Length: 181
Image: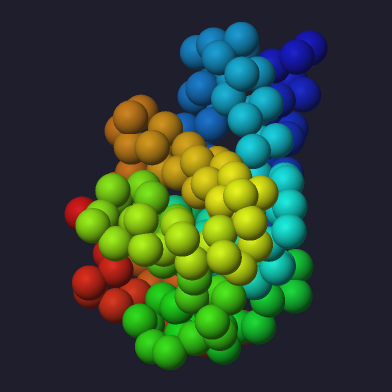
């Protein structure tokens, strides 16, 4: 019964985001206990703390982008649009163009955190100055959560698709310097 319910949850996500989640179905079939633990990590991606909406969702997009060059970035972008983040902000972030200051800080912090770049300390200080230690934690947990999907997908051999990201009906070519390695 539990497997049936987990498959339904995955199927709903696939329909909602027009997304192939075969790797999540495989997870459920291979280890229901593992799937339950994986899905409980979803709580990481629910606490926004003092971080504004656009910065928080930008962190999800930036984190997914560290690991993925398409479908997972698409879902993070779709979730941001659903939450009210302007498509123009997402386009600017993905195109490496000037963007809303808060969104850019969330995006850059998540990318620097997961890629362990040299500018992480500077970005951490900027996040703390703007939103405090709770802001650092909120952005870090969102980055951790957003990374889970592409990592599992790649581990199970399902990460083979790169694609342009669609935001507000327009295709966006992700800037080459931002693409996953």
